[in-house]
Length: 72
Image 1 (cartoon, rainbow, N blue to C red):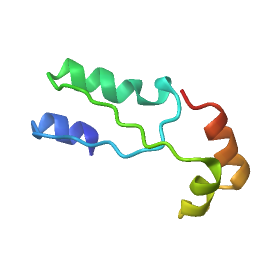
Image 2: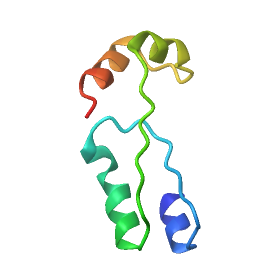
Image 3: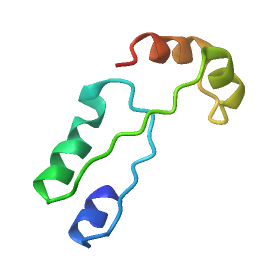
């Protein structure tokens, strides 16, 4: 959907994903800037307990702790 939005010249593209390390969102940044988009990265930070409580995808608690620990 991201690539299609770029090729369709969408006015705004929002990538809502659990990218916890720069290497995970580098693809999006590189492709957006290469196609003339200004990139704004918004970080919505919350504590681990809130992340666990909001988990609707069944991500194991240990995995949430690991993602929090490696957050860049």
